[in-house]
Image (cartoon, rainbow, N blue to C red; front, side, top):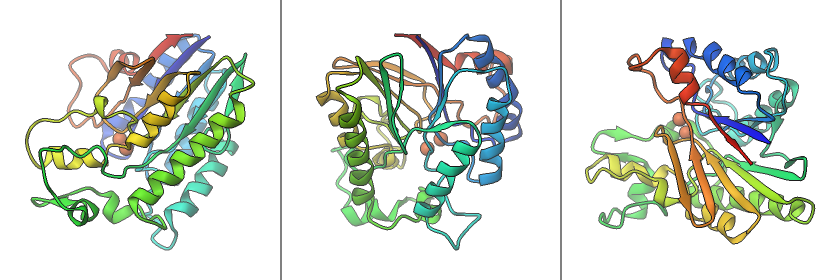
Length: 278
Ligand SMILES: [Fe+2]
Ligand SMILES: [Fe+2]
């Protein structure tokens, strides 16, 4: 079975992020995939998010297509009268209507392989222990004039830790619900499941914002289930393929294209679609 994954298209951010979409679709079409996975951060604009999903569905990519939303997708910047929970539910509905399987709503099984997923969240457990910022400072998501924009646009009903636990528990339930019926499990999250995959630079404010990359609980529950062979994720805009215990961790993001990549857009799109066989 051949699986392809990419994430962090961010088509609202730059013209290049919009222009690369047909190249990603073409790369996926040409890869002869059995399962295609989008690991979140398409656009905060719900209409644009739906258009992206539909573009994949209407292409020649005929395999099952799975999706988990990212933090930018649940932003309510354009819909301040709703909560992120409400937007999350709407995305699930839009996802189904657009021909994608909403992986955070239910696991997916193909040929005895289980696919589980969740957006995940962060609880500051990835903060670097060299810094002594208070819990309140991390909760403010502001440092040295820089701000983590979830503080403005992600409106969950609960603290970050509570939201992180909520999504970890949902993922745990998904894994439990299929583990007796599958031979292996591929987990997809938007947030990062392993601190080993977080890049610290030894300087602020960069390292401060690493606290918002993900949660240790996500990775821990994957490592505890021996059927989990791969975790796929996005959120960090750095490509990653790394072994963590028995798990292969893969991040394959498009990221922000503020400048043209060194190579042709179609080549870049191919590079940022990671394909692997199981
Ligand atoms: Fe992103
Ligand atoms: Fe993200």
